[in-house]
Image (cartoon, rainbow, N blue to C red; front, top):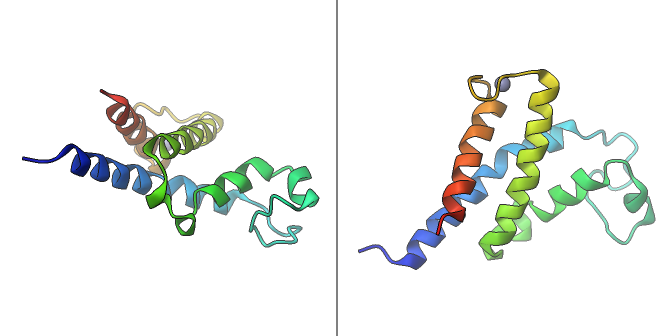
Length: 123
Ligand SMILES: [Zn+2]
């Protein structure tokens, strides 16, 4: 018999894995030419707070592996995935892909992730 705890842990692993694609996407999308921190978000630096890329940068900062996603409650990881889904969804709309049928990495990721989020939310 599989314990509830083990099921929760494996769900957490799948959610963390799902975050790796949008992380790469957001990182590749950022323009760091003028960034004084080379993309390392600093919430005490006024330049970071005023930066147009602040939302993406803060999201990345909060969801890097080294911030120990393993320690975060599932609800927080789910919230991060929802932001990521919106982000990837916006890209897909911009590219005018049909996210229900398209086989590109972004559309596949979005379909899989929405299913995973539903599964994680199910009682
Ligand atoms: Zn696509």
